[in-house]
Every structure is written in C-alpha cells, then in structure tokens.
Amino acid sequence: MAKPRIALIGGGHIGATIAQLAAQRELGQVILYDVIPGLPQGKALDLAEAAPIFGFDLQISGANDMACIAGADMVVVTAGIARKPGMDRDDLVVVNARIMAEVARGIRCYAPQAIVLVVSNPLDAMVTLCQRLTGFSSRRVFGMAGVLDSARFASFIAWELGVSVRDIHAPVLGGHGDTMVPIVRFANVNGIPVMDLLLRKYAGDQEKAQEVMAALVARTQNAGGEVVELLQTGSAFVSPAASAVTMIEAVLNDQKRLLPACALLNGEFGVRGYYVGVPCILGAGGVEQIVEFPLNDEEQRMFNDSVTTIRNLVDHLPVE
Image 1 (tube, rainbow, N blue to C red):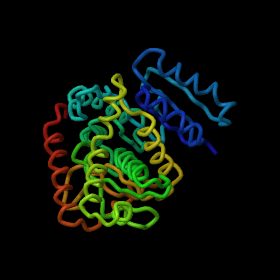
Image 2 (tube, one colour):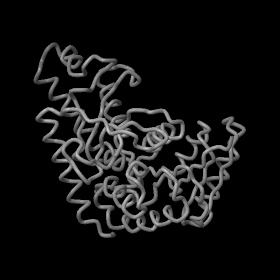
Image 3 (cartoon, one colour):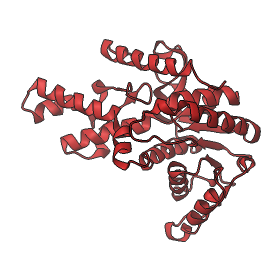
Image 4 (cartoon, rainbow, N blue to C red):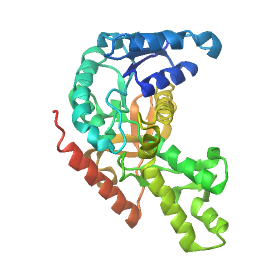
C-alpha cells in the first residue's frame, strides 16, 4: 500500500522539524517545498541520509517548484516570516497574507483533494485566508495552535506542581495570541483539578493559589513571545512542529482524536463565520466534529474578547 504524501510548504525551522518528526514516525512520504534555491533539497537530503540511523524507510524530497506537492494527501503550511523581538503575531499579517495568498492558490491548483493544516502566523487570519482562496470545505482546512498552547500551559503547571507533564491536561481555546483562553476550570492532573493541588501546595491560601494560576495563565499567553525574546533571531520551532505532527498523525491514521484546533465556527460557542481555536475530533475527514461545551461567565467573556481580536484582524485582511 502506498504511503500518504505529506507536503510541507516552507522549509524553515518548523517545516524541517515537521519533516523529521513525520519521517521518524513513518507517517508518509515527505515533500519539502520552499522558494529558496537549494534549501528544501539540502534539508531533504540531510534528513534522508539519517534514515539508516533513525530507522525509517520512506521517500523524502525537496523542490522549489510548487508542482512538487501534486497528489499530496496532506499539506502543511509553515511559510511566512517569523517574529522578531518586540513583534506580536499580528505584526506579521501584511507580509504573510501575501505569501499565504500565493500558497493557497498553489494548493488549489496542485493538491485539490488535500487536507490542509496551517501553522503560519498570525494563525487565525492565515487559516481564514487559506480556506477562502482554496475554496476547500472548512472541514479540510484548519489551523494548529491549541495543541501547542495547551502543551505550554501543561508544561508550566507541571513545573509549578513538580509532577510529570504526562499527567497534565490543560486545554486552551480561542485565538492564538495574547487573548487565548486557558480553561483553568478543566486543567487537571489525572482528573484532580489543578486549583485543588495549588491550594494544597500553598496550605489552603486561596489568594496565593489564584495568584500563581494567574501567572501560569499569563505565561501561557505570552509563551511564544518569551521564546522570541530569548532567541533574538527566531521563534519557537520544536514545540510547534511536534504539535503539528500530532494533528497530522490524527488525520492520516484516522485516530478520531479530540484536540484543540483552529476551526471555522458556524454557531458553536456563539460564533459564526470565524476561525477560532476549539475542541475538535480530527480524523480522516479533517475536522470531523466540533465539540461544544458550556463556558462559565468568565470563560465566555474571555472567549468573546478573543473572538473580537480575531474578527478585527480577519475583517481587515489585506489580501482577498
């Protein structure tokens, strides 16, 4: 049986790391596309030569002609400029919208049956533009953000409590930016609410526990910026790539996983016509179901604020 074809548009750090992780998991043949001459070819060759060491056996190639993505089962878009210190994700919108417009038209031309995962920032706007310009069903075009944001929230909680990150569940919804919505009420360590454990750690001091949680939430909301400030010359790439591969695997292996994804809402959570991070069932059909649950008043307020930020950005996209 032929392996699925995974086309990665963008050969930077995230694209190359996705290629490596996808190859190591043997999720399918990997095609790396980038406009820079020699870049995707060199990275593909380097990865292919590591196959005997990692133990995977599949085709890996790189090209500068977007026709290379023809017949792809899944296309992952990471193309665009990365953030620099002092920038937020929304600062990238003008440049990356132009890039996304070209990419989306290429996908529509060469891979009309593909499922598309968008990673490029600002995520909520870029996935919107990609879906509009490809004309694909919204089930087949969605974005990676919530898996990453939830992983960051879980990491910070684990470090604070001194427990394994494997046992943390900490969902984050809303837009991929400073207004993202960590759902504190559902954050737990193998079913035990994180707030209960914080109260135990701080001897029942409710004010201290809430103060610590507020700091964890704030760090989650600024986690990408924290990495950018430390690196100075780039942005996060390992954690975004790992998050994307989790979603790729869910689709290609039809796992029916419940994961946060940036999906087009049609009335769910009180939103219609905008891409927002929400819990989704991901399988062979892409976004197979959006899982809605009731938010409390504070969560709904934060979610609405996040949607307003998305709306303000999307409604003024420079490319249509």
